[in-house]
Structures are given as C-alpha cells and as structure tokens.
Length: 358
Ligand code: TRP
Image 1 (cartoon, rainbow, N blue to C red):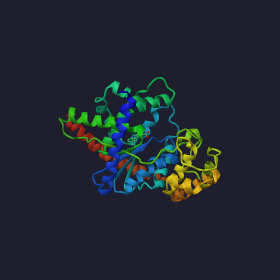
Image 2: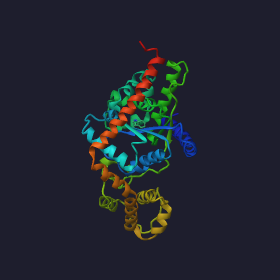
Image 3: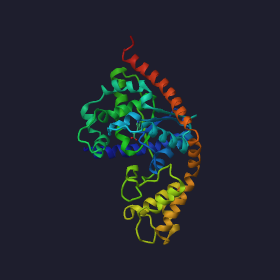
Image 4: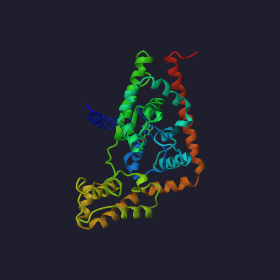
C-alpha cells in the first residue's frame, strides 16, 4: 500500500469514529479532554474559523474540557527566521478569545513555557524509528512546500513533539484537519509503545482520537487555491466589515448569470455559496436558488452580508480585547501555570515507571 491509500483508509476510519464521538459529546462529554492548537505564525482567517475555531468553541460549549496549545517551537520547523513571535502569539490569542474561547473554561499555553512537556520528547523519541518519521506524508509535503531539500531535525521529529503536546495532559480528543491524521496516528503508536515498553503494559497514556470537522474546506477568493494569508486571497478575522465586503467583491467568479452550486464545474461561485451558507446556517443550494439569475454581483453582496452579520459579535469582542493588551498575556501566563502543573505530574509519573527516580 502506498502512503496515499493508507492515508485515505485511515481518513475513512477517522470520519466514522468522529461521527460516533460527536454523538457521545451530545450525550455526555465528561471524561473528554480536547487538546488542539496552532502554530503562531500570525492572524487567522475565515478558513481557520469555519474549519476549526468554531468547532472548538462548540466543543467548549458542549462541556468538553478544552486545552489549546500555541505551538511556538513548531514555528521553527520550516523556516529560519522566527520573526515577531510575540506579536504572532498576541494575534492568535486575540483570535481565540474573540471567537469565543473562554479562558475560565479553557487552558491556553505555549510550548516554550512548559519545560516538562518538552522533556517528554526524549523518551518518546526512543519509541520511533527514522523510517517511520521519514514516511510521514504531512512532513514530506511541508518540506516540499517550504522549498527545502534538507530536512531539519526538528521538522523530522515535530510529530513526536506533537505527541508530547497531546499526551502530557492526557488529551483524548484532538480536533484537527485531515492533514494532521498521520500525527495523531503517530501519537497513538507512541502511547501504545510507551505503555508496553516502559510501563509493563500499564495504561500510563491512553490513545487519543482525532475529531474531524464536518465543515467543507473554504478555497481562496482567487479561485482554485487553498485560503492562505501569504497568497492574499483570504478574509482575515481581524478585517473590518468594509474590508470584508471589498475582499468579497474582488473575488473571482464567472460570467454566467444563473447562480448554481456546482463545486466541480464552478468552484469559485460554489466557494462563495459555501461561505454564505456557513455564515448564515443555510445550505449553498438554498442560497443559489434564492439568488437565481441575479448574477455574481448579487452573490457577492449576499455573501458579504452573511459573513459580516456572523462576524459582528466576534468583532465586538475583538474591539474590547484590544482595549486591554495586558489581559491577553495574563490569560496565557495563567494557562502556562496550569499546563506546567499537569506536565510536572505527568513527567513525574513517567520517571517513576521508567525507574528514573533517584
Ligand atoms: N501541527 C498543528 C498545525 O500545524 C498545530 C499543533 C501543534 C497541534 N501541536 C498540536 C494540533 C497538537 C493538534 C494537537 O496546525
């Protein structure tokens, strides 16, 4: 089997498993601890929002214990310049809180402030092999996207670091996109091998599940591409309603007046319909039918209106947060403290089962 086929087989399994988990969450979320996060490389856009942030808020609201990692060491896997990392962390924190992550119920923390988490990387690295690491399709794709020929040591091993991100707090639910599935699989393998090899079969670490989002992927506004800040084809969450309307107005469409939802044949029109549907809780087909032969100008106006209405409360919270920049880092320090507590306890347990208590 090639990487591709194993990948899609595990995708199908993960989708089915995700459905079952969503049902469980609705019935009884106790015992579930979600851990997920982002690399702090700057502000987030509506693709991030509809694809993952909104899902996290939904899980938090459903009563799932929520841990969010700002993966600052992961920034330096595929680039040489770290840039304004503090500024990027601030942007990410602002986006998190603006969309509705509640620091009273969720723990937000960074890699660099939690030494015991990072130390777990050492025993975990002993549990994986070089060919295993080199096979990871997401790491391979990222190396290629970075335009590098030589794989950096951190790039090669960051999926193991990510296993530490998840396992240090005994996260058992990891909401992620499809590209992260190889990392979750790697985490499961590490948990299993740790228990077998170092803990005599005792369940020190449970194997976490990926939770895939049901939302369709949003494309860039220039058609075809993925939404990506560096391509300038996005609506950033921090944009004003005017900027948003302008961006949508400039989106690529086609000249056919009749608006139809045809993702294969008319990807640009379908993309706007998808955005409008996600923002308004309707379906792309229903919105297309309403617009009928009014053309893509009308589609753009409708999409911008739906999006602006949806984003209004998020913008209001952002404006409040911007009044008090110190507060964001207070939230982070608080989260780091909680993360350090649990990381210390986990590392102590790891040392104990490994016989490294002197
Ligand atoms: N690799 C993830 C991304 O690029 C970010 C991340 C870091 C993460 N650690 C994690 C996601 C742990 C889930 C769990 O989006």
